[in-house]
Structure formats: C-alpha cells, structure tokens
Image (cartoon, rainbow, N blue to C red; front, side, top):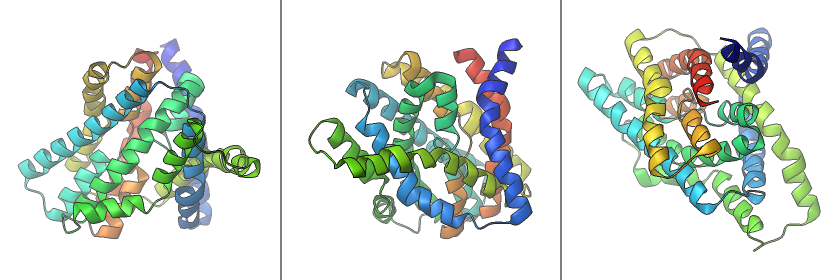
Length: 303
C-alpha cells in the first residue's frame, strides 16, 4: 500500500496537478485551446522529437523493438475495435469513433511525463520513440476510421506527412549520426527553448480539452473502449515486448505507453471527419480518470 501511495504522490499527482489547473482555468475563462494545439503540433512537439532523436543513445535494435510494440499494439487495437463494433452492429459514426478511441493512445501529453517521473530521462527518451511511432500510425488509421472509410488510406497518410513531426525525427537522427550540423542558435532555439515548452503545453491542452468534455453518451461502448485501452492493450504489449527482445526500462516503458488512455487528438479527428465526437470526448474523459487507478497498479507491478 505504501508503494502505491508513493507512486500516486510522486508520479501521478504532479501530472494531474497541471491537468487539473488547466481544467479549472478552462471552466473559469473558457479559453480557445486551438492556438495551443497549433503551437504544439507545428513548433513545440516537433522540437521535443528533434531533441530526443538528436541526443538519443539507445541502440538501434532497442529502437526497433519499441517501434515494433507500438505498431503491434496499434494494429491489435484496430482489429479488436472492428470485431467489437461489428458484433454490436453499431452505426457508422459510433463504430468509427470507437475504433479511433481504442487506437489513438495518449503517449505524449500523459505518457512522456509519466515515464519521465517513473524512470527518469531514460524513460522519457524511450517514451518519445513510442509516441513518434503511434502518432504516425494512429493518425493515419484515425483519419481513415473517423471518416467511416470515405477517406482513402493514401489521403490519410498524406495528412500525417503534412505535420512536421516526421521530418523533425528524421532531422534529429541525421544530427545524431553526424551527417548534418545545425548552427548553434538554431540548436539552442529548438532544443533548449522550444522543446521545453512541449510537455507543459501538452498537459495544459489536455486539461483545457477535458474542461470542454461532457460524459454524456452510451455507457456500454465507453466502458468497453476504456477496458480495451487501459487493460487489454498492456497485456498485448507484454508478449510483443518480449518477442522483440526488450528488457529493463524499454520493456517497462513499452508496456506503460500501451496502457495510456485515449488521446485528445482522437476527438479532434472524429470531429473533423464526421464521427460521433460526443462519444470520443466522453471516452477520453473516462479513460483518463480511470487511468489513475490502472496505471498506479501497473507501475507498482513494474517498479
């Protein structure tokens, strides 16, 4: 019990203090979260990804293993989501929103700081790899299913490639390998200033988004999506991590990242492409709150 309370106090609580503060600011002042979202997508998060990849010291096989788990869990969630929606014969809007909710994982806003607090810089570095992979595959699949299949996979991929995160990762790897060298002012602006704004910005955005969320909706689909996202996904991640030869911090981070709640971005995609946005918002809210319990238990087992 002491260990669980320590995890809640030292690892979970700092994250939810920021989320909670942003939540109450959102309720009190009702600010528009879109400018923060745009800055995160096009400036702060790419800077964080660039810094992570440019200073990375992880072996290539380890990077491949973490990426393999991220892809495997995402595809498994997609298949399970399709099976569940077809079994229940839900309409196109709810089915698309359900599948997007179980695929898209909050590996950044929540996952990176959680792994930072739990496992130090090594945890954050590995969480960044997991996030970079899931944001690419999650966005592509998310756009496709959020649109009810009306958007082609190629068009979905083009939307993903229009975001600078992929190019930031490539640039970081080139700098890490010594293939290119950026001027000192650029490195300092990106790595020392912009990258530091990403995590507080992500947590603040999550709080603001949750402040706009209502838990109205269909109880059974919300519970099912929450169970898949928080309970089933880490059980899928464990054998995949062992299969890819992961151990130590990499194994723990891969499992923890797979157990994160539904991403806030899922709601944005469903809203833009015509799905059941109310359901996705409610699932994000419920899975985020329930994750306080599930992640505490999971961390106590892993730590």
